[in-house]
Amino acid sequence: MKGRFGLLGSALLLCAVTSLLLGRYQPSPLEAAMRLWQGLAGHPSELWTVIVELRAPRIVAAMCIGAALSASGAAYQALFRNPLASPEVLGGLAGAAFGAALGILLGHSLWQVQLSSFIFGLMAVGMTLLLARLVGIHGIVVLLLAGLITGAFFTALLSTAKYVADPYDKLPAITYWLMGTLSSVSAHSVWLTAPLMALATAALIGLGHALNVLSMGDEEATTLGVPVRATRAWVIALATLLGTLSVTLAGMIAWVGLLIPQIARLIWGADNRRVLPASALLGALYLLLLDDVARTAFTVELPLGVLTALVGLPLLAVVLRRAAVSWAD
Image 1 (cartoon, one colour):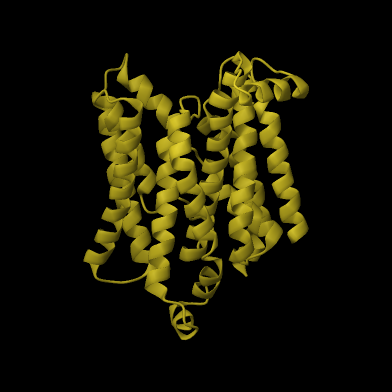
Image 2: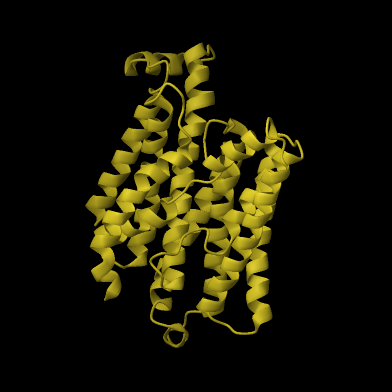
């Protein structure tokens, strides 16, 4: 198992370094190293600016978002005992998408759009939890149904925002945001959110054992000393934070949080102590590779969310077919 994690980490590091050299201008590794050394010595060049201020933040964002969506998806699947659960299951991503659309509609700047997206994402999950509490019945099914209602509500609000948007200005901007892209990611926003995403992902991974116990049922978990409600609340809070921050940075990135945990379970088994870190590493590598394709394989950059859907759907069909027997057991 350790060998697999080491191999996966090495592949991620190699891909990240290679990604620094990919783009319209592709320097040799020696030239890039020389220019980076000169920049560190106080003599930055144009290549230094391209690598450090443009490519590096985008690479970090791709890895953080891929890890965040995959880890949160794996956590939700374990928490709800449902292989089809994903980061949008509680309506948080729908709320974040509406928040971004509202910010664009009101003509806000990029950071204000991102802040609006973040606030509405958290608000949506809060509405889900409140709705589930108002029903008065504690249970996974009630929470899932409340998330479905909240997601539908914010999806309707999003459709309304698109309907009233200026078709020549605001509507294209909203549509492009919803497609998901890292082209507008700023270094400031990445360096601000990346540490928070890393800490939240690490904290979620640390709950792997508790999620294993929860999978036995609430009564069994309580008998074994696991605080069921507190653990469930922490998982939801951390997964919500990761999903919302991902939408805040890059818009809607589809299928990553559903696909990658399935692959991780096929390779590492059902132990969440292994599945969660494996999902994070696989997700980071997967999204980084697809972002490299999106920005280099075509004359015009392809929206990342479109590419993840095109690649993810057939992969998910294959993975689910192979995983069906193990999930049925």
